[in-house]
Image: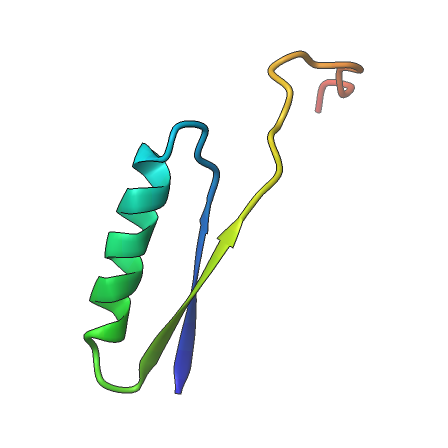
Length: 53
C-alpha cells in the first residue's frame, strides 16, 4: 500500500479544507492511503541569513 503525505499549514482553515480534499482524492485510488499532517507556523522574518553559495 502506498502512503501519501499531505503536508500543510493553514491559518484560517481554507488550506486545511483543500488538504482534506486532496486526501480524499488520494484515498479514492486503490492501494493508496493519505496521511494528513500540519506543520508549525513559520516566521516570515529571517533571524540569520545563510552564507551565499
